[in-house]
Length: 297
Image (cartoon, rainbow, N blue to C red; front, side, top):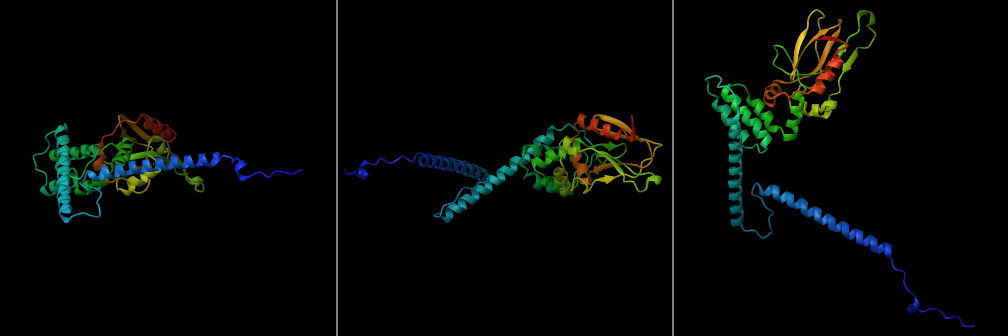
């Protein structure tokens, strides 16, 4: 019996469906990556176009470079002018009393202009407009150091600082805000070897996380550590205001000290611009934390 050996022509190859599917997937991924890169490049080009800069080519004439440089200078000058106009428009809408009759310092004004012309965010332009309105009414309200710090603030950092301001309290007859976080109970004499007990809020629950505090500290808006008051008297109370709420704190027993973050002079100046919005949740939580150590009225 003769066995017939199959020829190559009679063999039907098995289709490599898995390989074809993987190839199509890679091709789709490559197309998606290409689209993403194009969109990213487009966004980059759009940002640079706002300052008169476009991608260059190898074959570019010096005359074309000069023309583009002049165009960029004109665009930047126009943008700075537009920024200053926006700041002035805000200042003119601020409702403020006429204040003292003195004129603002000329050096302060031209330093203000040099900084304000580079403020592009509408939100920050509002802040700079308010500064100019207040300074015109009450010269000496804002130092050049404060302006320099404010110039470094991004919109995101300004929102962080606004949150800090909304959580701040002021003691009667004091102008510097503090963010009260709780109190510390020092041990009595007969418990000298007992650790102090701290009653404290977690500020992150109210929108101010610890990294945010560190950022504000780096910007010299808040002092660089949590502070503690001296031991409070049990025979008197102190008046505080946070947002729309006024309250009095009187220590229930000796050895109680407040814990807080304190605004720097620059931070205190800027806090007046951002305004305090009442944070009922924070005030309620603060007073609940304080209740075991203070008589609250």
